[in-house]
Length: 368
Image (cartoon, rainbow, N blue to C red):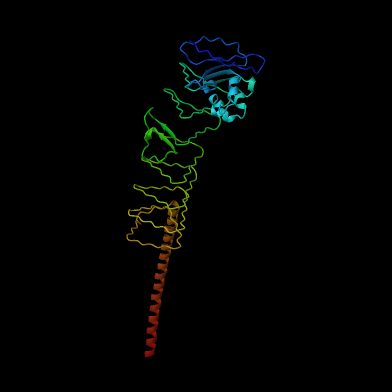
């Protein structure tokens, strides 16, 4: 036997009459439904929620399933008169964006009774399946609100997100971006991962694939410590100026060879004490070395000078050639002086001979 209930018909807000199709409780024998009259401003189908007992009147006003086509209906307007009544019909984000009676008047569109829309609500699941393509399009806002979890899966094709404005990702807990992940496999963070419950992690195929970052300006600001682990070769190429400003202690540890090449001028200034301890051999090949030392203290236990190996610049070679010419010129002048000395020596011997003859002559005259 069918259970027939006298449900209230939809009230008209305009001169034309509207009809509301309301389904009764589920029974063993369903009574045939009368076809709806011609659609004017709205048409809705209402299935009440499950009735717990005979005195449960909430099932009459709370929908188990509700579909409305056209403008807002009388049952939506009546639900707004009770506390939290519209919460069973409209999404919470729509309710929060409107005020007063605009919650139900704008449920079909911004022009109230002149707007036509679609409203669906239920206390169960909403399932939509298509064996082909599925399109959703709107010229205004798309707002998706989920109370628990959102999962988007593409079995064989890509997932593309494009925007003409700002793209924002926000989470109360961790933001994780991982590639090469197997669907359904539990993720176990590595020991080096310290992102915590509210951090950000970007992992490329569990660390087995490359990660590439390119931008005009990249700014990294760590309010605490910064740690970088590189298991392979690290290359830094800077085609402009570099500034390292360290406001604290700096330590560098090299467990291999260290080679530095400078092809431009350099200035090094230390305003504090510096202690350099070397337990290996340091070879310094200097093309030109100019040092200005105000105070110097050296404590050397072993000191080796390899002065046999000297590299000079072209200007120094030119200067050495000039010094060689000066040396040769001085050698010639020295030879000339040596000739002059020899001439003076001969003249001195001549004078000495003349003095001897004069001495002999004076002695002869005295004896006479």
